[in-house]
Length: 307
Image 1 (cartoon, rainbow, N blue to C red):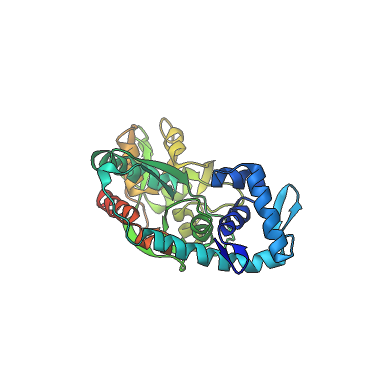
Image 2: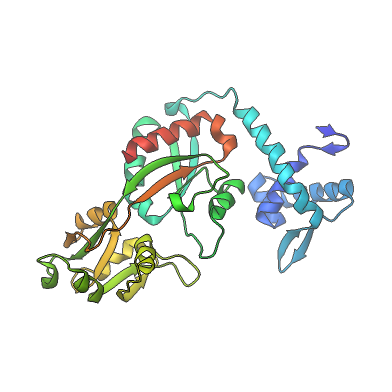
């Protein structure tokens, strides 16, 4: 469809090129050939009398004009999606669809298996793709959510309330406290934990590298001026119990996750010697998907699984 000389279908190509920064990847995203995307870009360059993208280090980066255009293009496409969903029906048992959900490995472990079992009963042809959320140190609040949703990387993001974005709808999922895990055979914790013993014991922590945030309890301890003796740092919560079992190490985990690991490993659950503030997990989705009945249904099933 042409509007004042511009083929509006080509706006989808521009959006994909901004997201992927590569002609071949944009073509894959759009289910088109590379030559078709290149030809579309040529027509767009001619229409706007601007290169729109320049090649820098193997990536196609938007020109100044393209940077100004992209938010407006997103607005047009988001409005079109809202119209497309306006009268959509949804029958869970008949729908074939894959939903992409981004969350921490902690949330994936404690919530997603139960959620998947409910989906299998209610919508057996619906599939999930689970993506791991890794907040980056120094990033603007909400930037990870904005990136994930606005670049179409996922349908839902589940993350701590403190890292949410103010640009997208949100809904509370669950709240969780903290517990300490120790090896069941560790003689030092039979009578519980004093703060002195807690801080002096060797700890296993979850960290995701020098450029990323540590876990929530690590941030709280640092804010209180307290320092643990950290002997092992791993990038995944799932590796933590491997270094606690059979040795003197402690680990402080979200209570739901600690309880899950205690059911699978020879671990003892302990009350922390100080009160950690609970964390609230929220889910967020793009505003244009408010009208998508399938996603609204999925969010409700997820809340039921989290209850």
